[in-house]
Each structure stands twice: as structure tokens, then as C-alpha cells.
Length: 461
Ligand SMILES: Nc1ncnc2c1ncn2[C@@H]1O[C@H](COP(=O)(O)OP(=O)(O)O)[C@@H](O)[C@H]1O
Ligand SMILES: [Mg+2]
Image (cartoon, rainbow, N blue to C red; front, side, top):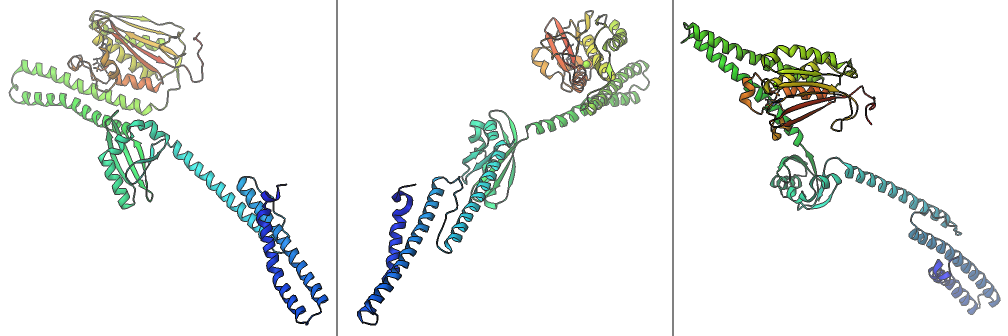
């Protein structure tokens, strides 16, 4: 039990006493007056007065107790807002219901507040985990709050973003019109980025949602560049063909020797166009199939032997030597035979064209553990003794139409698409391509292809 002072009697006591005085004052005055004027015998007046005073005192005590119970309830609620208080026991008629209703009201309010807090916490967690940066700005464009993605995407560069003139103009417009405003923004520091910023006004402040469009823009540019490059690559031989046709029709109409020479060049140019179209078609076919890895199991040695045999005339023409070293027990892997034939033909073709004339080309394979490659699966390597590839070109070699020496590639009948095809075939097989080159010593292209899905490394340590 709390001491009376602290338990609430300090307020309920005086209030009860004041009530008693107020209730007892009028009857006391009336009885005194009646006894004084002789209208009531003093003994009767005293008895009636005593009865009224007793009733007033009892009422005052009951009321003071109820007030005390209510005061304690409110104090308990204030001290421990999360523990449900016991229903107060109120004595006066009507007070009990009033107390129960008050308690119900408090509990309903508390439930609503708890639900509100839970949904606010949920909303906070959602914006905090949003993959796109989200910032809350005041009317002046200062940051009030930002989510985790905004911190990791912009960090200390947020001020530079918010200073961007297009963003400031968009914020002003959004606040003025009360409607979301979207803008494309390019940032140059710390790295070049293409962003799409959406400003959403919400009364006073505004939210800024930023989406990174760098990848999409790069892809769009790549696509546009690819079409431009393809047309350019096709237009050059076509222009040459048209030129020779004009010459054959006009000035060289009767010159047999010139005709022979021009027709030879025209055949070469037509061949170049055909190779280009063939490579473009292969590339698009491989790209279409790229999302679904092959399922048929294939033993690589017979396939590689066949490819090597087919290359033999070309090897002879280059006065080179092709050394094939394939372990017969190479485990079969899921692979697309046609695509792999294209892949290794392209690699051997490059080794012949860009290798050392009269040099050796080695085609080898294996399944052993290699720290440069993922565990399991098999690898196939094509090595040449050519001049090699300068280091700075290596990361870009598999880009479409990328050639270290354009003139040389053209003169040997290259399209610039061979390694792009290799990259896409490897990617469809979920494999890896490793390019190692030592200037002056030669180049090794290693293709690693995974074993059947779910198979663990049997060759590892
Ligand atoms: N074995 C190699 N040795 C040196 N350079 C190579 C080798 N393979 C490829 N390259 C370089 O990579 C470029 C791209 O090869 P590729 O995509 O096959 O195109 P292409 O052979 O039609 O020119 C070649 O132009 C060449 O400069
Ligand atoms: Mg090539």
C-alpha cells in the first residue's frame, strides 16, 4: 500500500472534506433556523441534523474513495503505460460504469497507438530497405533524412547531387505545382552516372527518389553502336562492289586483264560481306539461346579432333603446325556441339591468323584442379607463338568489332566478331574465358566449361 500522501489522499481527502462541508452546510443552517424559531423542537432538530450530516459524511467518504481510485489509475497509467491496469473498484452508483468506460477508451486508444507505431515501423523499414536511394528534402532542398541506399550510392557526394541545377529546378517545380516531377540527370563525379530523379512533393517537404539508369543507357548505346558498326562494316565492301561494277560497265568494259583483277577483288568483298552476315546471324542465334544452358552430354575429345582435322588445310596454308594433346578420359559435359565447334574454330582460326607464321599451335584439354579456374568441369586451351596482345587491349577483345589492328584483321578476312561469338557461347555454357598473353611470346585462350549441374568437384584436393 502506498502511503496516504503519495497514494492520492493528498488530493482526494481535501476534496472529500470540501464536499462534506458543501453537503452538510445547507441542512445545518435550516435545522438551526427551525430550532431557533421554535418551529421544531431542539431534540428533533438535533436528531434530523445528525442524520443529514451522517448521510453527507458517508457520501463524501465514498466519493473521496472513488476519486482516489481514479487518481491511482491515472498515476499507474502514467508510470507504466504498457502494462494494462486493473479495473478500479468504484462505489458510487454510476461511477463504476464511468470508470469501466474510461478504461475501455484508454485501452482502445492504446491499441490504436500500438498499431500506428507498428505500421510506421513497417513503413520505415520498407523505405530503409528500398533498393533505390530515397531522400527527404525540405523546401530549400536540404536533406532531412535519407535511406541506406542513398547513403551507399551518394555518401559524401549528396551535396553535389542536390546542387545539380536540373534537380533544383525540378524541386522548385514540384513544390510549386504539388505534382511529382521526373528528370534525367547525368553526374560526372566521382564516376559518370545517368540517373532518373523523381521529386514527389508531400505538403511542406518533398521526397527525392533516384534510379540509376547507367546500365540501361550503356546498353542502349551499345545497341545503337552495334547497328552503326554493322552497317558501316557492310557498307564498306558494298561501296567497293558498286564502284567496281561501275568501272566494269564503263572504262574497263573491254579490258580483259582489268576485269579478271576486279572480279577477283569483287569476289573477296562479297566473301567478306557473307562472312559478316554469317557471323551476325550466329551471334544473334547464340544470344537468343543464352538464357538456357545446354543439356545434352558431350564428349569433347572426338569433337576437338574433328575440328583440328577440318583446320588442317588452313594450317598447311599458313605453314604452321597444330599439336593436339587431349586426354582420352575427359569427362563428358553438358554442351552444344555446334556452338562449341564454332567457338574452337574461331580460336584456332585466330591462332593461325595472328600467330607466328610457321609456328606451332597447341590444342590441349584437361580436367585437373587449377587455381585460376572454378573447381570441377573441363578446360580447353588454344596456345600460339605469335606476337601476343598488348595488355590494355585484353579486356576489350570480346567486344563486337573490337580489333587490335583493324587493317591486319581485314587483310586476313576477319570480321571482328569471332571473340564476341566465343564470349557468348562460353556464357551460354555458364563457363569462363581466360586470355593470357605475353608480348613477343604468344597468347593462350583457355575455355573452362562446367560439369553437369549438381556435380561437385571430384578432381579437387
Ligand atoms: N591469338 C591471337 N593473337 C593475337 N591477337 C589476337 C589473337 N586472337 C585475337 N586477336 C586479336 O583480337 C581481335 C579480335 O578477334 P576476333 O574477334 O576473332 O576478330 P577477327 O579475328 O575477325 O579480327 C583480332 O582482330 C586480333 O587483333
Ligand atoms: Mg577471329
